[in-house]
Image (tube, rainbow, N blue to C red; front, side):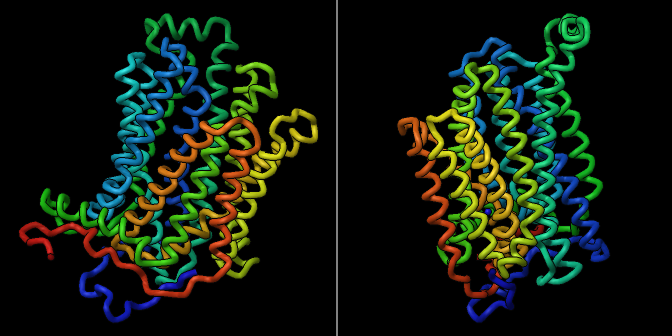
Length: 467
């Protein structure tokens, strides 16, 4: 955001097979890990490039802040609405197809952002990006876990690969933020380069739109890599009847996950706590940065620097996740430690609110870094626990449920934090939520069988769905 794999017990629906193992058992875990890292990096790099210039680009196109807030609401609501259906779709038609589709949707969205100034075009782009976010929330990781299990068995180490994937994501966001903020600035350094670009395209392309257009190019590279580097087994033909019947069953099975397994409930609650922490940080930090610097422009620059540093701290935390599990002797205790670090960081941000002294500023910056460091430590260990409890037939669906929990709680926590008076209260409430959920991991979870999601599979052509 340490159950161990076991054979199904009597009463489990073991008569329905799981999804087939990835093609080519010769694809070794190290190769699978490198490809998973590359996919994670390529997917998140363009998104990082859009962070620094997104609001400024839309503002330069003549759109107001209220409209821009509406654009981001479209993204969040679309991602939340599509999370479970697209997770089930991945389990039905395959990881590679869904990932490539996500890349194509993002490519279209970035192209709209870079070239279009109309509100309807940007709204469409945000909706497409929300769909892509939902599509991408599980397939790459599910592919990696399936591949490692097929080669090395269900007890193979997953933490290292998941940690490296998390580090690649954070590094891509950090690098993308720097590139996105630096490219327009570099274009402005040259004598008349920015003006020439604008004039040559009739105002269609401006310096602020260059990061979005470059992001569209990176998305094409991402799609080509996914199609060529992620082998999958041949699946039964995915007929319309099979997809329509399989996806809703996957959704229903995903919604039942937390109800029937205590460990999965803890995983989902941990994802929810992470959403509350991120909502507080992303909503409240920009205003504090502007207040510290004295102007909105310099505050935006400071926030961009903080965001980059936060992503780097998250990458470091992901790298330290396997060591944290070894040091604490279990993934559960590593999640507990990560949650404690997040709560400490939020507390430091809370108690330093209202003070701009050097010591308070240093403590607040430290707290900001600790939030992302703790989330980086907890994430791979939480997912390691999830993958050991959920079998291949519903792995992407389970990841989508986890992502949905994070997004919905983040949305609610953001609204709550915005309604509360400015000061330490929003920060300390978020810290309390994170700490309370972290303490759920004090007791080690009992080992149990993998949870099958047997309905999340395609129906071969010419057959009828099982009832």
